Length: 327
Ligand code: PBG
Image (tube, rainbow, N blue to C red; front, side, top):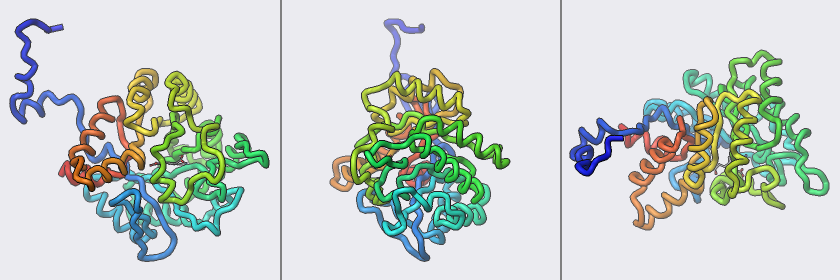
């Protein structure tokens, strides 16, 4: 340690060149993943009220937007489908439809922009009328192993459509291993799995559930998503997903769980990401619309904090805003 009474840490902050020279953490657009919402139809672009600046877009509009994001350097997208209520049912029947909206969106994006990486969400909530990520028993329990079978079919449908990264966000036990086996059996050995390892039962998902109209109709998600009070349990989940064959791990949400992120960084050699979720984004937007916070400055500070805590890359609705700021 070079600490002595003569140390003057401010010398390393004296001008922008020195500050840049000694900066410990960088952000570049290639570390950012843009989550996006796809709608059926043509020429549609609906603002999401609780996420100002975010839209639900039809496939054609999404392809246009993705082209622009590509030019900004944001080249990984994470996709969610907006399914109309009349097409949802208890069994998530449309989750693996080969010509379903989601699969068509993946195929169109891949055709237009083959080098853009597509991460696809695996979970049943966009497709279930009850809003849960899994299948429900009559008594309201979530049926783990039955759900995993559907998740495997969903993942396969996405891989066949051209997904590069399968991202299970459902939190069922054993799904990473099962999906890996299903993918390999069909020859999709190059398709990656990004496991939502430590996904907490969080209030910060509120705006996202508005965007998809996917809030659970009864009960919460606490029997599958993690208790915010638990850190050791996150280690267990991360080690399991690592052992089951995940290629990358995620901690979600981001800012309230930086301690978890930093800890998981110590115990796995897999790439690690954090999801700066809808509520974290909405807070920044709402405060800045009131003139209480500077959105751009606080967004960049949030993202650098997430990187500093140990994330290699970040899912954020501010990805393209940040890329523009990084110029
Ligand atoms: C559900 C899912 C959720 C999010 C991503 N996938 C919400 C939930 O678990 O209810 C939240 C993302 C966000 O808030 O930005 N499988």
